[in-house]
Length: 174
Image (cartoon, rainbow, N blue to C red; front, side, top):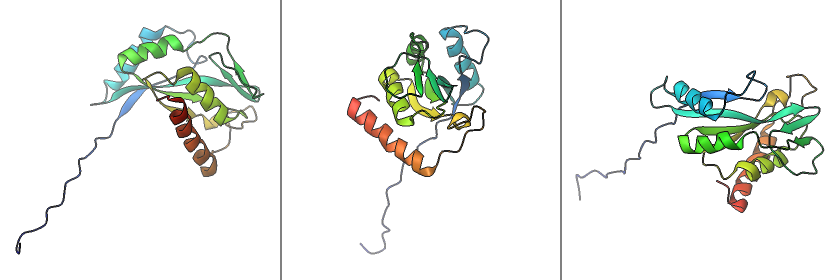
């Protein structure tokens, strides 16, 4: 077929998702106004940007001593992880599921094992459709008690990423 040019398939352009929202921790506001308030905040923030998806960074582990205190019950032998007797997040995450708010669960790990923290977070909240990722607050990563933690190395991040993926695959969390 002389004279005809080969056609190459065009690749679909995947639009980038723009997330806009807020960060929450139990030590941030002087009181918790409740789940509907946080849905409204997420929607309001996302509404300021065209096509933005409402998102939140939801702190579920706060720096405590040399480790982290989780705002939900959990069982571990890790000496630097402490857990609440009550779940302070379930109600709001359930409403986020229903409302289309996407959430990054975040911890301030101190010297606690990130692999163990990831496992505990996914065991507790992996069933929630709103949970789209996990964050590490490096300000408190191996901190000496001040918000001057150390940077995560490429090796550490690479070790957590496959572990996170294996956890999702082996437990069925998504």
